Amino acid sequence: MSEILLSQLAHVELISPKPDKTVEWMKEVFGLEETTREGQSVYLRGWAEWLHSSLIVTEGPEPGVGRIGWRTYGPEDPEIVAKRLAGTEEAVGWVDAWTGHGATYRYRAPHGRHLHEVFWDVERYQAPPEKRDPVLENRPQRFSGRGIGARYLDHVTMPTRNMRGDIDFYRRLGARHTAQTEVEPGFEVFSTLTCNGIRSTHDLALVPDFSGMTGRAHHVAFRVDQRQDVERAAEIFLANDTPIEFGPGIHGIDEITYLYVREPGGFRMEINAGGWVNTMPDWETTTYQAADGNPGQNLWRNVDAPDGFHDAWPLPAGQAADRQHAAVTDERMRGFFGDQAGGPR
Image 1 (cartoon, rainbow, N blue to C red):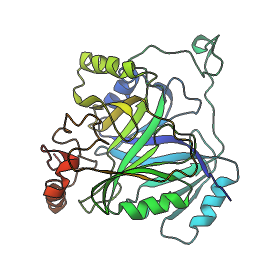
Image 2: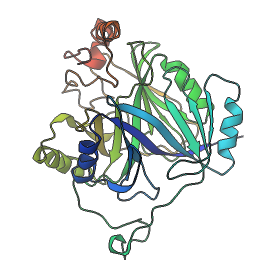
Image 3: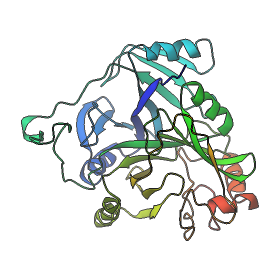
């Protein structure tokens, strides 16, 4: 029997030590729409997203990612996930409701220990008259034209101390393991997964965590319409005093045009466009070798990721930082991290 339990990556909670500046940047530069505010959190969405919110900015002591929300494919699916995880160390439990969605089941990945939640009932965005699109009714609102115009949430990338263990866990919940990069056979340093059969790229990616910490995050990505929009975004970022960390370029694994920056709270954000469509239900994981360059990271193999690009948050300290630095400067890792490889800053 074929099974799809999850339909989409619905939201990511971004922890920021500078929430006011982060929210202002997300709205005015990144182009997100504010939905509501509750307590220490501000709820935002891309202009073409139907759900209540896709990015939740919450105040915290240092950058990172909190809860990661997934909408299920049907109303009974949250209960199926709950039963499948009952009695395990991954199970967290039920919450009656969160802002923007109804009854929610929460769990943690076994090794990365990232907090996930699944739900079916959702609040849909209702645009006021002045924001409605009178022609394109499939859109929740007209194009805002503000900032880079981020359209919708695309994926989240997270480190884990046991990539294979977490991949197997996500596959138990119906995810497809679409591609991976190895520095040597059996030593994976990047993997992409998608929760359903109609994704053009991926909604979840994993990288190794050598620090011994858990619950860390590398970046959150949003989409724009066209590859040219990524180049235009680069100009808008620079005009708004947001330095470009990496890109524009093309990732080989999913063929998306990418661009990375850091928002005012210090967390890495990606904007991307393009990519190929993989609708094959029996797709077998593609394995790339990082030797002689990393086409997954940079299709043309002509630019290495900059020093510090492999930082993840919260940043490790003390012995954890030493372990991380030793791992990414290991000779075996050069093909993936590049000659500029360095430890967390």
